[in-house]
Length: 145
Image 1: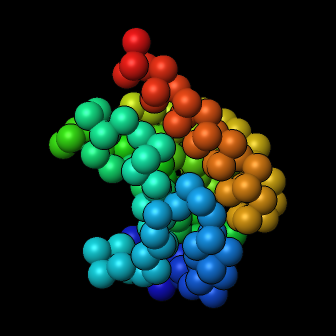
Image 2: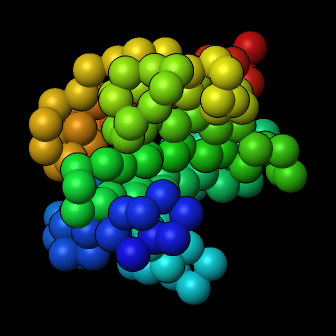
Image 3: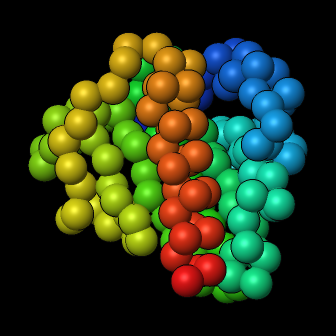
């Protein structure tokens, strides 16, 4: 059980998700329950999709819990400075259960109410992946102008 929030990681769901995503061309590698993030899977994104001069790495971290809660973080490393956002499903006094913390800092106070599909796989395939593809294009537009 996750002592901080009283939730149990859904390791079976995370393993299945990691297995399904491992073959995706936009994913360079999948790290399941790394020692630094033992309740997460971390998807390293294909570096060729980003301008190396500006972004040294990008990844998605997914946490899932048996009560249906999740946190999905998208992070770009701009050579030492992180640019990030986060999709969440959990009880909150400030936001609806489904909410989003926008970039570039994913600050709690900037959260926005959202509504996500029920299944985590559907959230990843219909919300996260399309958003990420748009972001990849925006990164090239932003840094190549």
